[in-house]
Amino acid sequence: MIRINLEKCIGCGLCAEDCQCSDIKIIDWKAQPLFKSCLNCGHCIAVCPQNAVSIDEYDMNEVLDYSKDKFYVEPEKVLNSIKYRRSIRNFTDKPVEKEKLMKIIDAGRFTPSGGNRQPISFVVVQDNMSELTKLTLDVLNDIACSYVPNEDDPLDSQKKRYSVMWKMMHRQYNKYGKDKLFFNAPSIIIVLSDKNLSFNPYVDGGLAAANMQTMADALNLGACFNGFFTFASHDKNIREFLNISDSKVVVTSLLFGYTNNKYYRTVPRKSAEVNWR
Image (cartoon, rainbow, N blue to C red; front, side, top):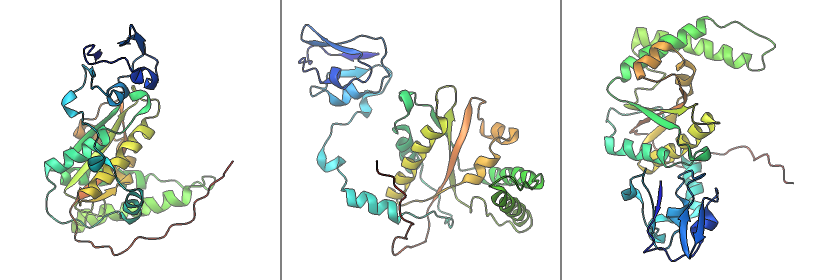
């Protein structure tokens, strides 16, 4: 519930103008919430010059006052950081500190979601990486063994490639202990989205995951999206192992860890396909 400190409120109307739900009105020169269609998005908190607004459901201690020195990031540096990032598949044994993992989760938690429904949750695996690795490879191997060619499927060649790859990864792990799935990463964060809350669970989760990867780069951690786990995540045993409820879909997973890899430059990409209208 929105609360407005009427002693602080100066009736400037900025909160009412910025409310996408039109759920705040200026009455008798003071802002008044209508409590009809509020999304608890917090725009009113952010735009109020008097710091007169709060929301009961949130920890208001998380609210930060804007400072250009602390918040502004030069556009070229943002773009260069995006260009420079690499998917890491060579991790050291050094564990990732919980404090850093929490900052990564916060980057996902503060990512906007459709209707501010905030459907995203996370599973962090550290101590049980070996169990998750074996379980996932077993499931992928079963999927690979059930592959049936379909010439009418435009993605059939990719499915065939994955089938061969998953069988090979399964053998390498069981016979030689080589982890070509999670690459011996010390941590994995699985991004979940509640389909009972979100109309676009994969969009909401994907946006959060992108911000999480960016935060990992800022923390000098190697990161890698792991799509293969998503293929296996429907499995009952995996979901029970990770305590994932039926309402939640696995959007993606990210491996995190320290790496000795060094990169000296960015890489090229094909030109953007843009249709200007």
